[in-house]
Image 1 (cartoon, helix red, strand yellow):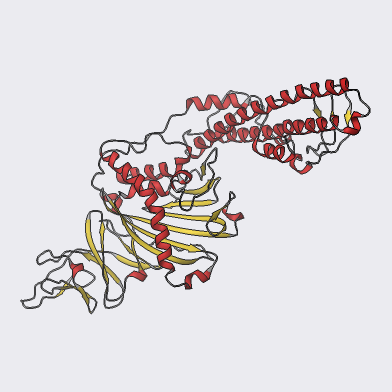
Image 2 (cartoon, rainbow, N blue to C red; image 1 turned 120 degrees about the horizontal axis):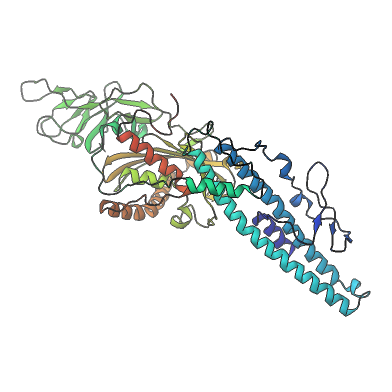
Length: 536
């Protein structure tokens, strides 16, 4: 094993629970682990300083091991113990790897031509045979450690789910009679907890039913302000109903039913005349509140079509399609400070909006689905996690430098840390120099159609905004990414309609998607307290 390979192994093999059989290490001061020398079987000192000091200069975590005073107080404490277990295993693993590295150095020393001048061939052969046996034992120990760390990580991930999802209630009042575990016994305790936990399940199958009224009682973004000129209209579908948006005499947007009261002609086929939308059939004109203000060629009648509360804020047009009174506050969807908006794109997609949200809230599929676009060249990690507060719909991905949030009722916000445009580094967003911020709004047009509003912002390369036709470049790339997803999600939808459950076996990296589904289920049944909601 070369020095480079050994160093790589040290970083990739995180644990060992047992001490190498024939070597003892000398501890440095202040509980930190510093290797100054290694003792052989006969107690002889190998007089060589360790050249990888920074890699193996790791503090012994046993001095900071949590003191449980003989009992588990709650699951959080068990989780903390499990974390210290991992730290201890990592500390021990570094000693295993160091043992192998130093044994390899001894082999080099034995084969050194200068050393051979003072030894017989028989002595050299004997030394090499002994070293070969010791190396084989050390390598076996590393493989055992590798298996143990996988088990420990699985249990730690499971404990995190138990805590984050609050599956164990009254944790501050329930006590266990089990003794506080040591690094060698705590995994047995975690096994006990794991065995008692229920398996989550979701049933999202069959044709999507008519949308319940509770899901309509939110502000929904439906268009970008830049797309709504004074003389233009934007027809939209929302919850199986047709609407049209236009600006009134005062420049404020309005949303009315896209059907003339006279002969049910689509109003968006007409035109905007002095802040009123004019039907192309007989010229009836409606204001932004739905009132008919002109009826050419006939006696005027008091007629009104349905309208929705409509508001403009921060470059977006919002509507309230529900029957409850609209809330006074609209959420802010602006990118963080320091970002500039580079693209605003609207698409109509042939899938139900919940399936699109499931897809957007899942990053673990990227190395398999988006191999021709943004995830080209991404490696497949051994474990993908989404880390989130216990009562939140936001968090960050590990190992990807991406922060993500689901914002009710149909919005996904994400900030991606990138080292260079188009490239992703495996570190958190705060450690990255440049970032891309994305907004996805998934408006439920119908049970099989979604209106997607996409906004892309950057905190670097402002000159890109001034390049001609750059908007078309961004749209082309966005369509490429979406097409990679659509072929999969359309297939999901077909099978779901035929009775397949698209949420059959949720796993660890499905956490945010599962939380969205639990939130939506609670909304649809009219729950007074919604799960994972921020306290009011």
